[in-house]
Image 1 (cartoon, rainbow, N blue to C red):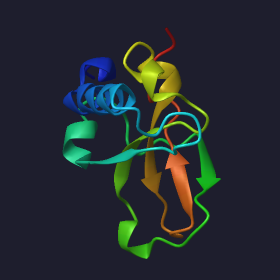
Image 2: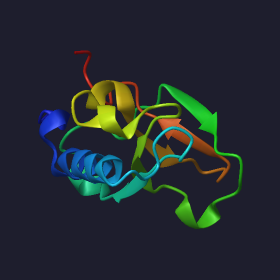
Image 3: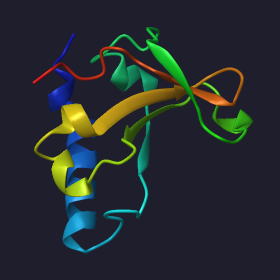
Image 4: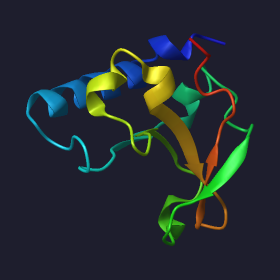
Amino acid sequence: MKDILTAPFVEEIKKMTANMYRLGWDERNGGNISYLLDENEVSEYLDTAHVCRTIPIGFSAPSLIGKLFIVTGTGKYFKNVADDPQTNLGIIRIAEDAQTAEVSSSVFPAP
């Protein structure tokens, strides 16, 4: 598999968060961002079928079942994403129950 830290979608979210931080948007309690991914592209970088845990999303999202997203982590700062994507980003899939997100165990390698 290819190195996920070099994936175009990782580079894109690093640029987005850096720009949002530069503009003073969404830092501190501002929230998180997510970026819809193409499964074929992601599968070049990680095993999209492997799930290490599930987390509740707090709402029902039936139209998003099976969709993959790269997301900023809860409590993480946009200013840190570019320098430390391993700690500040994750890839999730909306589960079949439409109520939880499935997290891959090997999204990013340890630094």
